[in-house]
Image 1 (cartoon, rainbow, N blue to C red):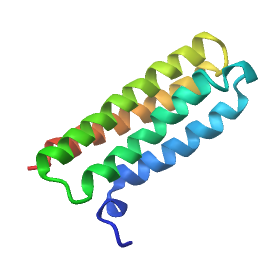
Image 2 (cartoon, helix red, strand yellow; image 1 turned 90 degrees about the horizontal axis):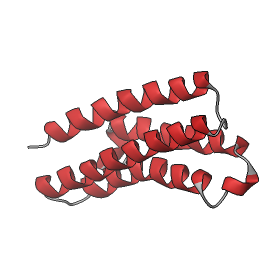
Image 3 (cartoon, helix red, strand yellow; image 1 turned 90 degrees about the vertical axis):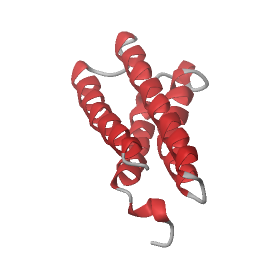
Image 4 (tube, rainbow, N blue to C red; image 1 turned 135 degrees about the horizontal axis):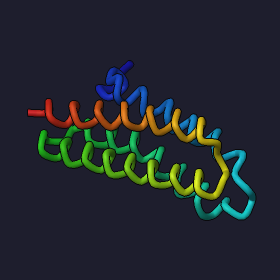
Length: 117
């Protein structure tokens, strides 16, 4: 690993989460391809993207700002998960699994942000 962010467990988990969300949306109806499917995929990918962007040559306040963007993107994913559940694109069990992982990832992001000095 050559980049600092590659060693971060929070980044690794965010990368996996983005891929899981991408797979989840494969089962959404075609009418959602440019709406909910696209929105949740972009938001999920943005979590890891902002962690990496903030860690490269940024000052600590700047890195905190980018982790804040990751947190906001994750909140957007959770809202999209609620929408998917309400529209019956995902089961309650799928929702709960992704919701629980989102909560874990949110806590990791908050802890990471708080430890940037």
